[in-house]
Image 1 (cartoon, helix red, strand yellow):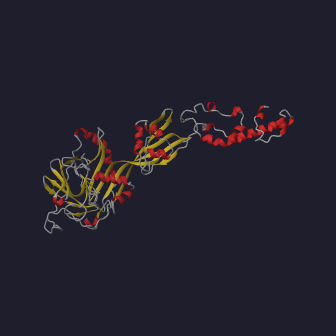
Image 2 (tube, one colour):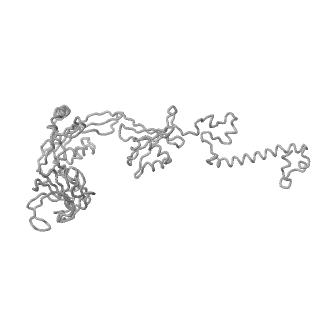
Image 3 (cartoon, one colour):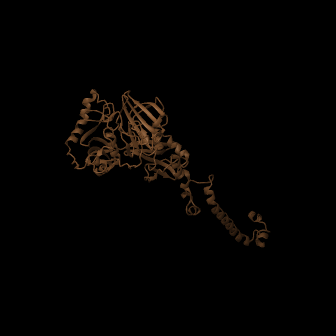
Length: 489
């Protein structure tokens, strides 16, 4: 036979009978053995090369239809799957089939310094997938504002991203899902249930501790401070026995509290004087806190322009200057604070000067409504863009605490002038805001009457006994560290 002729008698040891007599009986018995040997060699070679071919992008087979040599051995031809038989869309992108078993959600926590590019690299998704997801519209913008600690839920099928979900806030979910041509996005709103809570507390050590004992979160305590910040100096004027009452909202999702809601109405009694504030939204959607009479709690000026450790020098027209050793009026208040502490404008106004100003060092002077002026001195540096003529709003940062000029330590020297006359910033009566317009008066009373009635109907808080002098009962409500350094101007 022809296959016998292809064998080189010098390299292959073939019995002479086979070489000389191809048609002999011995030849007929040897041929099947030789064929089996060749087939076995080919089979082993294929099995050896198969893993390499499997990873070859040209010869790779869809993992869903891959079969090992042994699996093929056990199956008939009709049992071997093909892409067209079992997977008609093998060459298309995977799309989530919602009729199948639910795909488990995986959870990823955003790390410090991560952005979506790094996050997608971490879950082994290509930049092309990220681009497709970010092209879904305005919902995708939320992904640019993720913070460390935020959680991302996602689903993978065969290492392909099928869905991604984030919860920007309780009750709000953004869902991105795989589609044939990219991704789709939708916002899902789950309505939160709201309940009103009534708490009260008496200050025996600090406002924060009293608030925590009453069940208020730190966030609510700070909101309370913001509401009364124009009437009460919480760093200097809090006394033992001062007390408060707050009605506020709590919000729940599936029976579990997820966050605090709005403060609705509150009362703070400081040194025996009651301050009430009620939340009101006018028909135009503007919201604020007002007195029972309809005057805004927000005044034209903040009491203090800086977060400070202590007051190192009070307003004193007859003070002896410790450096110059002469009687020199101290026309403002010195707030001791670390160098670099932000200094805020106490009211809306226009910058009249920002630069070096003799003994004041680096100083800013702001004019407010033509009648009032405020001065901020000894700054280490100015805020960006702080120049003459710049308009600033209450709370804007105008500079940073320092000790330039005649100063022996870092502090802010703050002055308050009315028609050019220096007034004590701690005691000057600040101008009130305008009351509720007459056109909203009836609406204001209808919206706030029930809340104020609740406050009036509640049982009074027992007031602690005050046997010691008022000054001895002074409490630093915010528990700032008391710096012992001496600073002067």
